Image: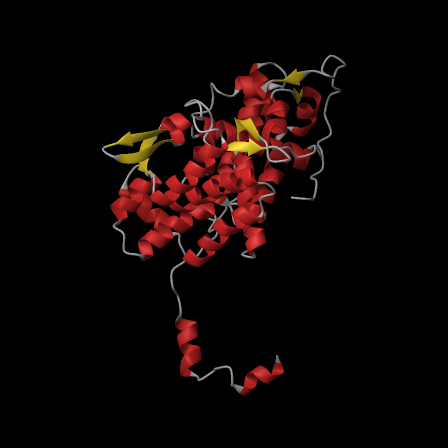
Length: 350
């Protein structure tokens, strides 16, 4: 959102004592959030809020974590109010965010205000007023997103290799895109994967996936992933530490970093790959959605799809699949009935 919302005029002057003071949101939040995925999402929403309301430069990756560890208290006092929160949530709805996303955005800012009030950096009245803010109605559920065809998935995987600027980056990107396009992983799950999460069970290679809400599941690793994984393992030197990240950052020049790639880094690789492939905007979750849709169209039983997606029950998977765009070709059939083919004279006015 490029347009900056107007800042609130304080009803009181911020004392000199507040100027230069910071609040460690990263340290205060874990006791209020259910999982590291929620924490990461709250960081993202708070960063977006401060960019939209206070005009701060958006951050990502390590820079965002550093910001969350030292939020400027004077800026927070000027930026947090019920009126500004309500206006910001309205802009999210207008921008097309779904109900779940808007509710999470509200929860992130309300939690920040509440923690500030507990630390006596924000007055209780303001925090309570913000807690009473309810977002405007948004489209129910998640955003529709993209549902890629099998050919588009193949094209994206190939493009992830083509955008690489070094051999090591090519191997890393190939593993990243292949795992997303076959194993239906969330970007947070892929970022959190460690070499020690791979194991041999009953002669099958499986990956232990750390999912939402401290859930854990085992997923069979396809042969296609194992081939790419072995090339990446050789690039790392052959015997990675079990506690080390499965996927890592790549420095300029192709040197492999010791730190893992962040969820935002995964998003960046997918976005660039899709752009290079000419298939428009694609988010990592679109790949998860596309895997589910492809399996459903291929006649795979829904219980198997549900296990792959790691849903709590099959009913959740049914709702998930119901959001995929259904074939609705009545207009196409009517066009055929009318005989409106390429030779139809109406096209001469194009």
